Image (cartoon, rainbow, N blue to C red):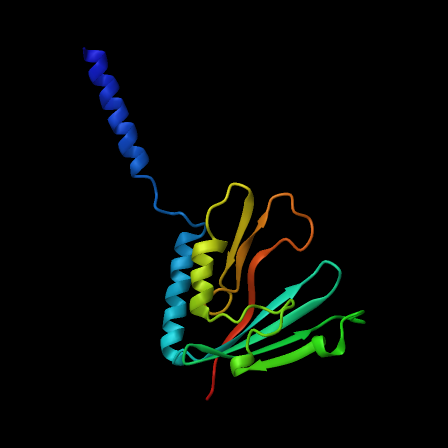
Length: 176
C-alpha cells in the first residue's frame, strides 16, 4: 500500500513539474520582449511613420537592399535595388532597381523584402522565426537602438542561402 502511495505521489509531482515547465516557446524570449518594448516606444515617438532597409545576399556574390516606407502604420513605398561589386549578369535592366508606390506596393516578385510593417515583422518573429526548433540554429540581434536587426534561423545541414528571416540594416523616423 505504501509503495502505491509513493508511486502516485511521484507521478503527481512529475506531472506537476512537467506542467510547470517554462512558457518560453521562443529562442531569445527575454531579448525579444525587450526589443518589442523598444519598438513600441519608437512606434509612439515616430507616430508609426518610419522607413527601414532590409539587406540580403547570395553566395554567388549578388546582394540587394529593400527600403520600406511606412506612414501612419501603412506601407506606402517599397524601393528595391541590387548592389553588387561587379556585373549583374543576366538581370534585366528594369529589375536592377525599381520603386513601388501606393497600390503598386507588393507588385514585383523577386528578391525584394516583403512589404511589411515593423508590427508585422515582430509578429512574424514571434510566430515563425524564433520558435524553438530541434533542427535549426536561431539568430536574434538588436542593433537598431534595441529593435530587430537580425532575426531568423538556418536549418542544420543547409549549405547555401539558408537563412530564413530578416536582416534590417537601419530603422529611421520618417520626416513628413
